[in-house]
Amino acid sequence: MTTAISGPARRRSLRPLAGVLSAIAVSQTGTRVSAVALPWFVLVTTGSATRTGLVAFCEMAPYVVVKALTGPLVDRAGPRGVSWTTDLVSAIAAGAIPLLHALHLLSFPILLALVAVVGAARGPGDLAKEVMVPEAADLAEVPLERATGLSGTTERLASTLGPAAGGALVALLGPLTGIVVNACSFALGSVIIGLALPRGVGQSVDVASAHGGQAESESGYWRRFGEGWTFLRGQPLLLTVIVMVACTNLLDQGLSSVLIPVWARQSGGGATAIGLLSSAGGAAAVLGSLVAAALAHRLPRRLVFFAGFLVAGAPRFLVLGSGAPLGAALAVFAVAGLGAGFINPVIGAVVLERVPRRMLGRVSALGDSMAWAGIPLGGLLAGAAVAAAGLVPVLLVGGSAYFLTTTLAGLRPEWREMKRPVVRAGTTEADGASQARAEEITT
Image (cartoon, rainbow, N blue to C red; front, side, top):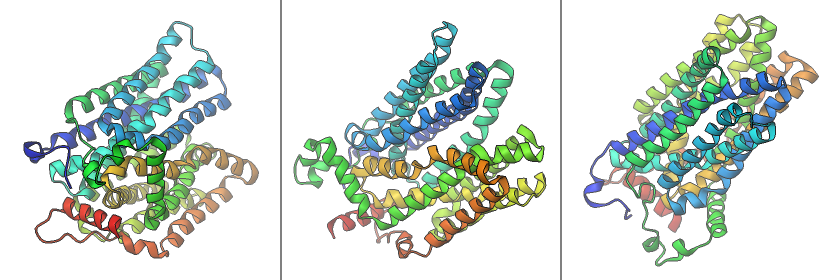
């Protein structure tokens, strides 16, 4: 395998990996701050919960769709350029919200349009950062599980600190301040990628030599998109993971956006209980991701993966449905967060090992979008179910569905393919993964 970054530039360097992780940290933290500030801004200015939900939908729907469609563009244009340009677009669109509001020019349709632009730009921006992780790990000579574990830890930490910071900013300075912070975080992420990542990161395969000519560089968008879908269809393990995660994402979204708030209101815990549960799960997930980054590459993947889902999924639903006190719920959510921290590093490593680098953008885009497809619907379905049947039955059914999804999926034969590729004598772990991908393509 030849690389776009060769010679002295291939010396061990931690700067690209640190740059990608830093960009992920600032952009994800800003997004989590906005997840508190933007809904509150809509509520206090319109007084409508329906409009608040519509704003959330207008951000997430473009995120999922555009992310699915831009994979071939990320592969062709390069993830570095896509990352810093889309972060800049997100910064401008997010910054326009408080600016237009201050000028008394922000109507609700304009707000929806700006939020949609932010979501549409975030999709390829997040994808581009994911695509840069494996080569940055190669440059740093860091195992894939450790690199994806660090990436997962960064996201978990942002998910823990961002909402807390957003709540504090909204309480002290108002919701528009949180939206400004989000815009600034996108701008900072764009600068970090532009300065810390060398040109060529993510374009690690000499595709012309790999195909015996210029076919790859000259192929059109839809051909490249089709190649990604064809490759994904030929990967039963990846498809099984995607379908399973799509189901759990839908259930998780319903829990976080509807079931926990309704439980907190009915139990008398209020917003404080919601914050405590989120903090307990988030802090434990950070710890789990750190442990996974240090140890996951030495542990059996299949055992770690399903044990993580076993403790991270159904127990949260069941403890809330059982009427247990807040202290017990906090303990269960903490254990669940710890288990959740081990899941994404395993998924990330399996994907990065099985997908050729030249196709990583388009395949990851399709896979991520399919896995996220149920998220916009999770809250809607949970709300309708609670209205029809009540909270406790929905929690019990949700926990049972989570358990059955993760348990029955584990019985499929594809999971035997999760084992690490054999690294031959005289090769590095990255070389072994590349050799495994090459052998898959040629067989």
